[in-house]
Length: 341
Image 1 (tube, rainbow, N blue to C red):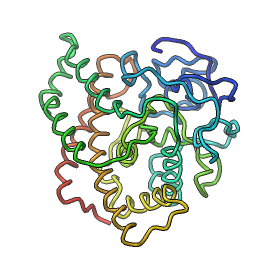
Image 2: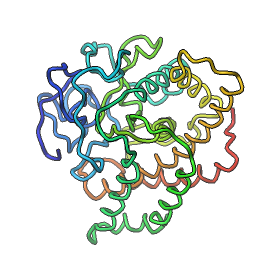
Image 3: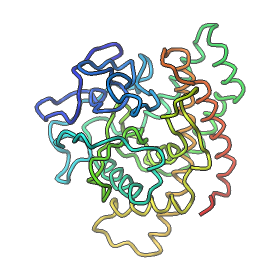
Image 4: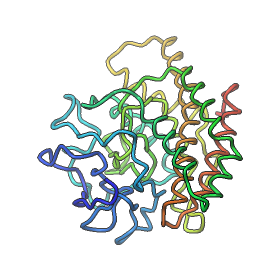
């Protein structure tokens, strides 16, 4: 897909347009290069209002696709329930907009995001359900970083500082001991990939966009990754063009608020005892905070690689360092995970 020009997709594609690779469906997120053309090597950044939509440029740069080819989307809705994918949704109105980082913590919006994510996770997609994406992609990123020529010295220093090759093995062992169901994941539910279509009342007020990283993956990664995104504001106008507020990582109370709405959608129609509900919540707290480490590790490696490849003005190495610092900080808190309420 790298370097291939595609018809620009401004909203939901009609069913007649399918099947198309997931990377084509970029209604308003990273991957669009102005009106009329899409170049998957570049992030959103052209056209009126681009600065207001600026987010971390995660569009693939030739070598950052998942390990398998982008799968074809199904030719019809995967289930009788409304699909969270913008398949038959109307074109977003002029009033629709991406969320802002600070809005992720608003209780009404957080509940709606949790419900929307649960709906997304409930979809059945017609391709492999083996969860190779996470570690397969990280292993490839690490190999590509190790293969960088001499100009990649700062990146190598970062690898050596954090002993990332050994640390990836440690992370793998931790997650292998952490039960997490394999579901169809978005893998990048940050504020720029959530459109607010109307006044925030429920999940129908939101639309998820930008599916280039979507794959079958561990549930804990999608939720943990979303929690990590509470920390990062990608609309900062000065170098390094992002701002990290580690104190904004959701508290135990905020996480439980999200988890309860997520479970309410997953368990809709089931009778769940109070004891079972409490156990589900506590288990999910452990699961997502362990997988939040994988989010830091994944995007940290991704950012080291981008620093050697991208021409976009963004502090990739600074961002990588921030993600790995938070990785080790949060790893140290896992043995007694009780963030303040």
